Image 1 (cartoon, one colour):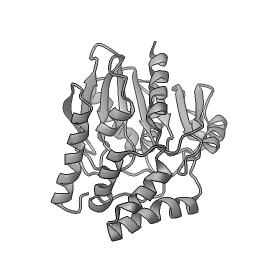
Image 2: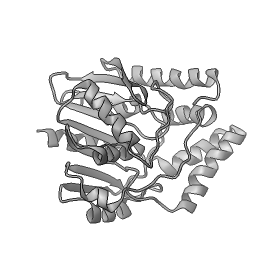
Image 3: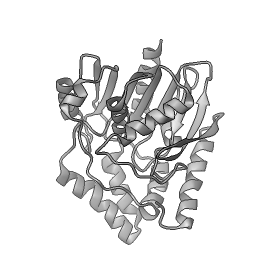
Image 4: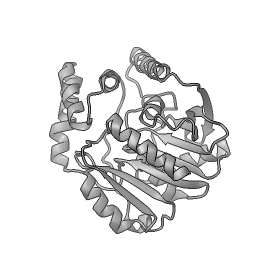
Length: 284
């Protein structure tokens, strides 16, 4: 998945930098699945209920740990490195069109021997979690999704000009200003680590540009697990108000929706703290 060993080393160097910056006690665990070796970072309180954190596209477990910072006293946390992403898991690329992601996640849950596990994820992590529920709801207590993929898509022309073209210009010119243009459209607040990390990922990692599908109404109506969705009003990728409208049409009554009125696709630290508090209150 990497274009060079040098590029891989630089990306994983930033991965290690981020996990150390978090200043937490943690350990790694490798799990063999039928899709490939999956790396997890385990932290938090081992005597508390389990939560699995799922990062977004072109991300890694340390980013998820930073996003959901504040859960450490209330949960045993399992931050997962999604396969075929710039992280420490295997390079196997799974399909968004079938139940690969659901099977994979349940293999991880079963290997960890988790019961009544909470799942929390953002962006592409939302797709993975919904695929997990579609495949099987056993052992899953509740899920929390922030600006999730797989429910609605935004205007493809806006995405092309504001997201993909700046990305391509950067890949061609290596001028950082194009990454900054990308981040300005996607991130609510400037993120220096994202600038560093994505600058390396865009150049040295083979990204997946497959169009993101949306969940079928019939499949959504079968889901019984409680779902809380944090939709971002100013989300270019997955517009918040459009998302809430469809959620209310397709999901059962166990759904809760919250519109983050000032947020773009990637939330700022204020909204992340708010999301963490909602997750903690649901646990009590």
